[in-house]
Amino acid sequence: MPRYYLGVDGGGTNCRIRLANENLETLAEARNGRSNLQIDGGEPAYRAILDGTRDVFAAAGIDYARAADTHACFGMAGGRMDTARDAFAARQWPFAGVKVYDDIDIAHAGALDGGEGSVIIIGTGSAAMSIVGGRRYQAGGWGFHIGDQMSGAILGRELVRHAVEAEDGLVEASPLTRAVIAALGGDNQAAMTWSFATEMNLKLLSSDGTEGCDDALVGRAPGEYGKLMPLWFEHLERRDPVAEKLLEMQLGHIHTYVRWFKSHGAAVMAVVGGLGQRLFPLLQQRYGDFVALPSYEPLHGAVLLARQNFASN
Image (cartoon, rainbow, N blue to C red; front, top):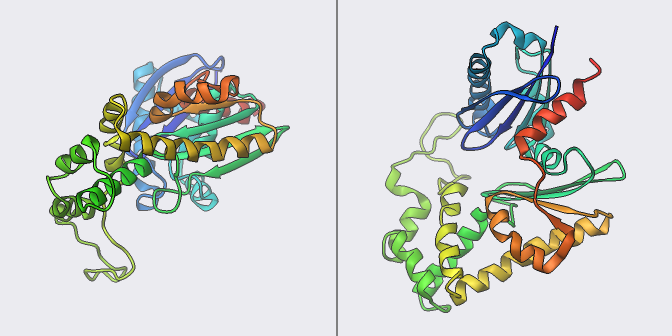
């Protein structure tokens, strides 16, 4: 009886699911809802994968009962924490076996076709990982509040900060800073309202259910800052001075990881993520053959890791 492999690329916005045969040939794909392990204890991710699994088996024309002959690998946003991955793997699954990874692992496997080397994710979030001489190294990926230095979310936040300071007359203004303020409502008061998401009338509850929480705030999600990236690129192409200043900041963050990769002997750095793909020509100018485009997408990496983990079972 044939076995199947199921890969999941679980993102904060949606998750993609692929069912493949023993030769890793794609039988069907499905897409479902958000799947970050740090959201509501992973419950939305659990439901998204279960529902998506039913969808992908139906799309492939295979009886859902064959999930019992399927080995699965999940690469999950919010999977940086060991405890989150372990708790998610321990849930009730219909599969013959489940392995849960951080999303950087499936990006690495896909980008380097299961081989050694390094990978950086530069998208709404950012992270870095390499495998050299059989040893795994990982850095970054600690989230919007304390990490993700290379990300579009952090770059977007720095862009908003600069625009607000320019509006106050503290730093140089430019067509880009004025465009950002216009996009956020026309002045700094509107930008502040936007940043705290107060117009959404959200309420934060304490653990006892009472309204208000002294040690937490409601603010815009990372993806909302990342949505400013097209505006930044538009003005970067026009040689806007603030856009160019932020580009140097961004390249400086990336260079920190390049040095780190080279310090432990990585020979190549694959660049994954929408923002990283846009920056790739500049990175190639700086680093030559050290940088590379990914061989495959992260979803292929998830299926590949499923086979690597369970082929002997």
